[in-house]
Image 1 (cartoon, rainbow, N blue to C red):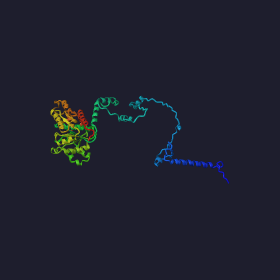
Image 2: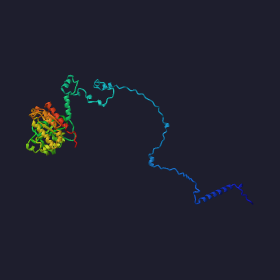
Image 3: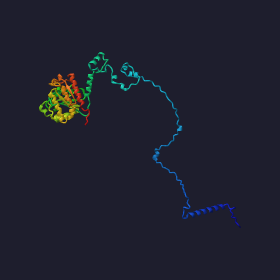
Length: 429
C-alpha cells in the first residue's frame, strides 16, 4: 500500500522545511564564528541597550519625622481684592490754644487742657502752688521790695549776688567717691593765721556740705585750734591714739571732738609740751586712719616745724594744700619758701594745685603792695584768696560763724570752693 507524502496534502510540511532552513543558517553562522578572523563577520558599529531598574532611595525615619509635605499652591484659588482709596478728614490742631491751656495763667483761671497732658506737667511748682507752699521770698533788697509792695504777687527771684552765692554753694557741695580727702594748712612762718584760716575754711565747708568735716590740730607746739570753738570735751589727739582699739563707730569717736554750730568737728592737740613732742608720724597715721572712717574731708592745722615727722605723714596723704601768707614782706617770702621746699622734696604737684590764703589782718599789710604779692603767687600756685580783717577773728577767741562780716564769710566760702575744686571727685587708684 503506497503512502502519499506530497507537500500539497501534508499541512505540517512547510513548517518542517522552515525549521530545517533555520538550523542550516545557524550552523553556517557558527561555522563562520569559529573562523579565526572575527572582524570579517562583526558589523562596523555595535550598540547594546540595557534597561536598568530605577534606583530606590530609602529615607531615614528621623528625616521623615521633620519632613514638610510639598503642597502645591494653586493661584487660581486666590480671590482678587479690588484696589480702593479711603479719604480721612484731618482736624487742624490749634497750637496757640493748646499752649494757652498749658500756661500758668490758664491753669489759674481753672481752664482744662483740651489735649491729654504728659506726666512732665506735674511739676512741683504747679502742684505746690499756693500760699502754704508758695515760692520762697526772693533774696536781695530790690526783689524783696517789689515782692512786698505787690503783696507777694510779683516775685523777681533772687538778686545776682545771691545767685552767685548759690553757685559757690554748689561748688562746695561737690560729691566725692573713693575715700576721704586730706587738706593740710601750712607755712613756715608762725603767727600768720594758719589756725584762723583752718577754722574759717572748715566752718564754710561744714555749713554747706551734708557730710562730716573734721579739723585736726597737728601742731607739735601746743596748737590753739580747739580754742576757736566752744569746747565740749577735754580729749586730745593723744586720747584718740590711746583709745583707737576701742573705737568701734562714730558715736565713740564723737565723744573725743568738739562740734561747732556749723557742724565742724575739732580734734585738739596735746596741751602738755612734754606730751606734744611724743606725737609723731605713727600717731598721726592712727588718727588719720580713724578720721578716714567717719569723715569725707580732713583739714590738718600744721605747725611751724615743716621738717617734723608729722609733716611728712601729712603731706603723704594730702590731696591739696593751703599755704597761708601774711601781708608783710617776710611773711610773703617765707610762704614762697614753703612752696620751694615742697617742690624740692617731691611735692611739685601739690604746689601746682595749691591755694594761697593771703591773710590781710596781719601787721604791715597796709605798707606793702598786695597786688604784687598776689602776682608772685599766681605764677606758682592755682589760686589765691584774700582774707579780710574781721574784729571777731582778731580777738583770737571762739569764732561765731554767723556773726562774721559778710565779706569775711564770702572770702571763707570762696576759699572752701577753690579747695574743693582742686580735690579729685574720684580716686584713680
